Length: 499
Image (cartoon, rainbow, N blue to C red; front, side, top):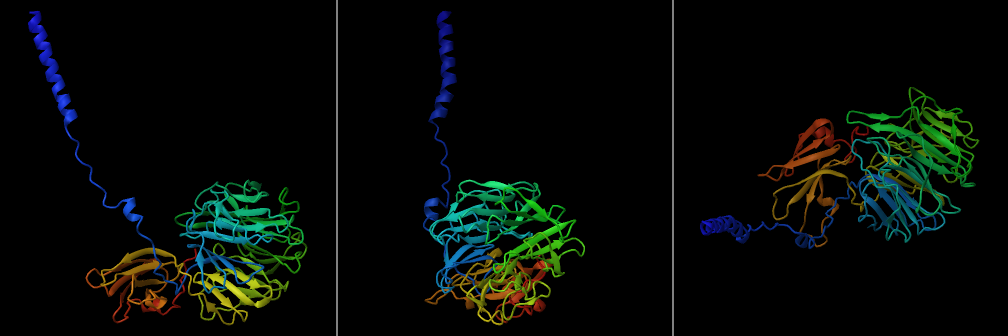
């Protein structure tokens, strides 16, 4: 009996263990190998195919005060570019860093090799790039290091004390929500540590900051309360104001005398280098309270000089003082304006044969007829105070929203819609030894572009979108378009997209 029982138990053990042993020996199915691997992709390199015939939105210009042929350009949707020969050639110097949307570029007045970059453009558009704080270069832009304020998302402006390189950063903070790195920050150790010297609230950031050049302990800044929603922009509130400090940011006073009260939107500030007692402010305010204000007593009292307001304050509202004339001031706008009587009257400073939507400005202190203007169409230069302009046509920073390709042979074409620079198409390659030229690109529909699609059977037929639901059909062979009214607009001008 015991023998039988032992045999049965042994048999059961075999029956139990055999499947397990069999399972161990069973070979697992081979995993499918990926078609694309990092090893394969590492062999591919990006190459630029353009275009630059319309370029893209330039947010800021910094010119070396010692060498006026060296410029740094901050692009709202295209990183930072540098030229050492006044725009003849350019080099992208920020492509490998964490943000592609640039708000501000500043050169340290003490050391032109020290470059500061504020990321995350400063307007409040529906389509807007955010950043990851501020960067610093110690070698003239050859390399950059992130110096913090990574949750600021949108930098208004950077100001540098010319005596000691102390840095102030006006951080607007996140556009779509509260909090983040929001307020006016100061660093006394070239960005290693930051102290928030002015904080208004979790909903209100700082959009502008200027220093008195005689005594940089005197600091002025503008608070900006805003919030973007899908359906609208809340562009202002009761916390918008101008603040002043006379002790390098330790204590602050809100400036009120002569300035609007109630809900205030975006404010642009400028201080005259000719007489720093004189400040200008363009103030967006509720009702009819806004306009251009001037103070002649270091901000203690203000007088409204005019009711002039830029067409979209959240998009523009930047002022620049002339380096030699205290009464001459420039304002960014759809068509940029100039006042020669201290802000009383405003006229266009010149828009002949160039793009609209000006955002940044530089006046040569040695020749005030020499301007640089950055706008939605790129960078322009004038030597006759704005009467005529030279377009810098080698900056390929067009802001594409969408791209698509066709089935054309032997080389396929690339199409897309761009911010304020039409819908367009161009070849991926040509038979020309010199490569692709601006003239190889062509416009398929005017206005702001979005998505483009090509007929899969006939690559000469392109469908393109424009703002507010516009849809057009373009025939490459005949040049015929179903939306001729848009194509008759200025070829690089957008239409009403700034809100």
